[in-house]
Length: 357
Image (cartoon, rainbow, N blue to C red; front, side, top):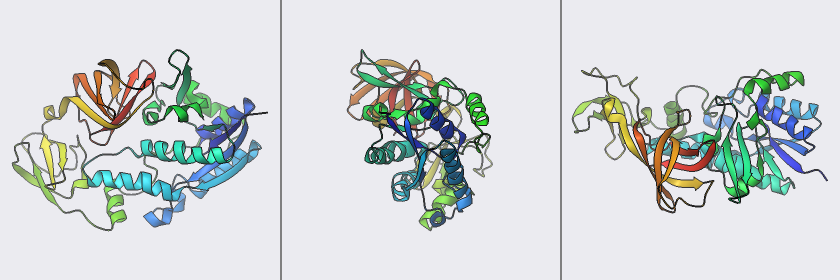
């Protein structure tokens, strides 16, 4: 009897080719598009969102051409609670979130897994560029980088558990994006040359700050720009408009270039520093997940990223308690940002990661 796979289909080329590849491996496949938010409620037209009518039509077209069952699951309530509300809460509290990681953690590899089990499916399949292998010696599933370094998405998947990795498949991990488009063209998929979706799918117009103010129905009070000694340098237009490392858009005329170092929510202040003041070697992370081990019991050498597209840097990591990682980088890192994730690698294997605090 063929194993069953639930294919998460966004309407894009990656998930469509993933579906094709699973069928070619004789899996019994069902396609599903997740409706992730009630578009009109947050001022986004149906035509502009990642789960738009056009995207559903593209996904359905591919599923039909492949002879697959196809569903649309409404996860709007869960997406609002676990992605949008977390996104807003982070900025309000002076952090810079990564909503893609939350979407993977709480929607694609949690809520969708529950539906897959209800449908009797053995695997959840997505179009992510990453690879999964099983290490016999460790008795663990490992998450590895994709072959295509320009498309590798292992960073946003670091929160996957052993149970999730055991029942997830990423067919594109061994392909380059150009190959994926060629496969789609060859099979006449309507989305073969469709553009990749943008990072924050629920913000289509304006800035993230505009979105947050519209969502909360209020403006954020202006406050002071201050230097590290507390000297007032000018006025800011509300703390949600700024992120660590930012220089442009401050609206200040100062003797030297200054950058956002920290958001002081308690005093409604934005602390500025010189470029040199943005560098530090130390990172503490919470809400951690380890993949290639149960715990880090002694100092370990890793390469790590403090943001999605950063080049990995050498560091030494320790784990002082069950939910804390402490990293000391060999070289000072620029603009380490609360709310972003630090993800650690051993070669092409993801060791694990956590949220920077």
